Image (cartoon, rainbow, N blue to C red; front, side, top):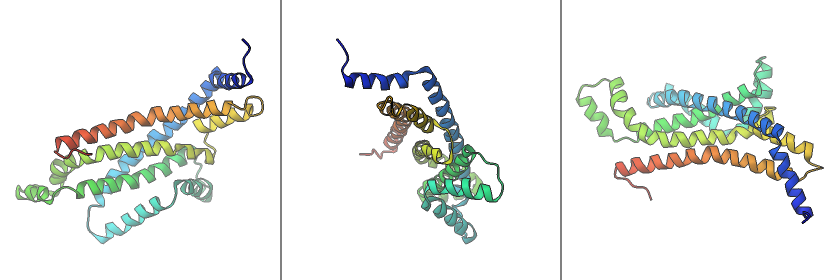
Length: 240
């Protein structure tokens, strides 16, 4: 039985996706995406934890720079920061930064601002009697943080940190705007070469990219929810 026109269009679009060369190119683009995401997450976690702990100090000399950093990074959209750093600062100061490097710096600093606020809030939300009891035992400030506050704050911090990691992953498609050939850019390039001859290729390519992000982010988000529910149940605070 001959295929209908619709079936032929769908089949031709699927053949573009299943082409070995196209799959290889998409895989290479995915590696670029994952590299930027992993490095950005690592920078965000490391820098955010340090800044968040420093931000617990009530001194104005600490709070003013912290609030300035936090609000500047969070208020300005990430896409604007990408343009400022890639097309502005890098050119102004002669930095030979690739789009990938700019992405790691921008996403890492944005993630660090979010992480710092999470750390500060997690530690500050702990009952004050925890600190008072530790002080009564003559523990130093460093020991109080190391043995009392930080271990308890981690339970509240880890699920939120995992969610932050997924948010960073989901922002990586913005890299296409600063010439980075990541998985979305590769998909666009493949679609452009087949746009006139195989218009349904766009559906299959974008659906495949959607599946990639879903396959990466959904299990991570699910693990975050499970951890939060488990620890809330353990603490007698079962969430709805």
